[in-house]
Length: 245
Image (cartoon, helix red, strand yellow):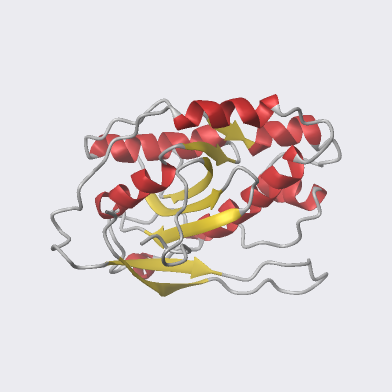
């Protein structure tokens, strides 16, 4: 069962998959994903489910001063191959959304390529591009500047789940502006339904029947507190997840 899904409640494989990754460096070819998050939105932009975990990059975690992930934080975290079947299920039938989405797509593309899974031609929706067109008051077009201009408040930047949630909120803000035509998002939704996604069995490192443990970083979001320190972000055991049917 996917985290965030209510038992017995079906989640249609259509809508938006808002993604964010933190990586060990800037190059998808030379560096690895060390944290991934997906926020599923339905066609009305309502949150359906969330998935997030730290990943073992099988090497150095990279710029801790940026993503605040220490080497000890990924001890016991799953490897990408172990979460790949769940990611394929989450992304299937959906428009891939991100802030500078081609960057997140490139890292996911390379991670799947490393395990021999071809990345399909999934339609993309970039909130950075939407903000350039429909958020004229932004002082810049990084996620933090756009979130500030949209009045979204503080969020735990450079955590995959924090960035994905903020990107989902920014998507809602931009799409609901009068200047955003339905074609900007309606056509990608139609295209996404027809994309054929591969399926992948569980990794051999995961015995049959054994749940997959995830390590999730959480921090509260909310109104900005002038002069206040943001809440600390710490990895926590977010429980276990069974293999998708």
